Image (cartoon, rainbow, N blue to C red; front, top):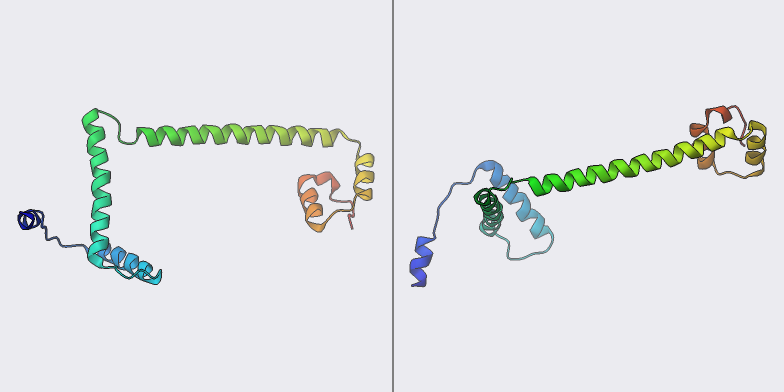
Length: 139
């Protein structure tokens, strides 16, 4: 009985060279990791199983009338919207800070900088941010 099931489920396939190269790379990586029971056949079966699960998910979605990528698209749009909002908030905060610094009298700002010891990285950052301070010798 078991032998009949094995014979019925047996399938001989030709694997393209491009896929075989991927299988060889996976095999080399796994052997490099110290695994012992690594064969090209086991890797090919694993890849076939993964592909079958993906195709099954697609077929199930089609049978239900769902879009194949709707959930993924919704997640990506939510991520983009969240990123845009956060970037906008950061830009607004930076712009408000920049405006406040610009409102400070230049002499007062130079005196504050003169009294505050700055690291080279901080000096470079300030030079990039505030073009009005470039002429001042920080060192």
